[in-house]
Every structure is written in structure tokens, then in C-alpha cells.
Length: 326
Image (cartoon, rainbow, N blue to C red; front, side, top):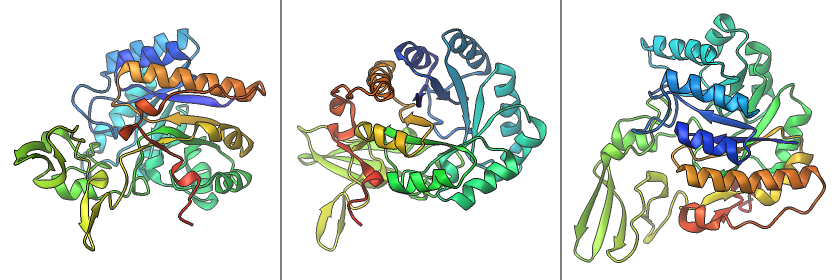
């Protein structure tokens, strides 16, 4: 059966994911060592230790994301978090930075290493480099590949592959985003925060509500309509006299119908995005995907689900898996 890897932004969400049927959960520490560094999210060392013990009692694994890029002169924080993850009993760490991968392989050789999507390794040569050099056991593939491309990659690598099947999308090849950094001075890939709430502001202007990020107006909506969170890549912009979502529509990835094809392509694990989401969201999405994975494993038709209302913009897309623009 393909492994279902589920998000846990808080200890409560982790428990909800495990109880709903997650094979593995992924989480991070409460600092800039992980790419979801938001107030109210993530784990202290004590919380992680307790969470790992609880997950293991129910047969689930815990993967710790240390997937940002250490700042020059600040590496000790990332090094300490590697030690903390191992001491807590984590089943693997998810890393992106080459230097941190080397440090982990040298100083924590028994701690299983996964390559983060932030590393953007999207071809066999890149993946085999990480596997051979740092003994990376699994690579989380960027959301830019078709199912056929994933199948071809799996024929040529000596590592497991993990792919996203539900949740938020990023317009950039992961690990390469500069939009939020430009607007706010906070880098998603180094500070671990995209479109930080501390830089968000709303203002009523006439009959519209303006949503701004770092002083830039990202969206304008009528006062009687819901105002979207001002994420730069999903904002409305004017280009060549047309106004709309120039970079990316505010929709979510939903590749549940592709699970049989992904299994045939040799994918080891399916990943759900959503560490900023509530435990109720996590529980419902995990239950739906666990039922789908079990159905595929047993050769049964996948059950119908109603996840659209949980998706951003209440709409879903197959994203790059289909690549209909080609």
C-alpha cells in the first residue's frame, strides 16, 4: 500500500491525522528551520517527543521538516534541530540544503534522510546525486511533473518517491520563489514564511476591500464578497489591459483520481499539503485519502468524495500532472 503522508501543524492536528488513518505525519519545530514558520504553528522539543511517542503507539511514523536553507553564521540552530529530531525519535528528517544534508549524514548517520520538495530535484541525475552522496532514501518530487515523467524517473533512480496529491500549489519550482521575499523582506526558503500575516493589511476603499501584502495591493473585492488572503502569486494583476490571476488561480491540487496511475508509476508515498489547516480539515482529508488508497490496494473502485469545499477557492485542479498547456 502506498504510504499516506499527512500534515501536522500542531500537536492536536497530529493526533487527528493519526486517528484518521495517516501512515506518516510531517511537522516542524517552532522556528525558521521549517517552511511553515507561522505564529501558533509547529512544535517545541517537548511536544515533538510526546507526539512521536503517541504516533508510534498507533503505528504511525513522524517525519520532521528541516527544509529551509540555513543563514550564513546561523547554522547552529539547524544543527541543534537535527539533534533534537533524532533525540525525539523521529523516523526521518526532510532536508533541502546541501550543507545540512552533509552535516546530517556525517553527524547523524542513523537518522533517515528525505529530500524536501524545496530542493526541486526533478530528474534522475539530480536525485541520484543526493541518494549517492548523502544516502537520501526518499525524494519529494516538485509539483511540475506529469505522471509519465514520474514513471520514467522511477526507472532510473535508487530512492523512493513521494508526490503531492492534495492541497496548496506553488507557481514556482519549489525552493525558487522570490515574490514574497521581494514584497516583505521575508524569504519563504530561508525564514520559512510565505506572505507573513504580520505584513498583511486590509482597507476599505469606496465599495471595495483592498488586501495588501507589504504595501502592495494584491486583491480588490466588493465589500459583500469574501476577501482572499493576499498571497502574491495568487493575486489579481493587470497585464496587457487584462486584469486577473496572472500567475496562478486560487485553487487547490486534487489528484485523488490519479492514485491508481501514480501507484503504477512506482510512487512510494502520497503527500497532503496543509500544516496551516485545522485539525478538522486534516481529519477529513486524511480519512478520504486513506479510503482511496485502501481501495486501490484492494482493487476496488475508489469511493466518491466531496473535498471541493475544503479546497482553496472551493475548486480543484490536477496541476502539472496533466500539463494541459503543453
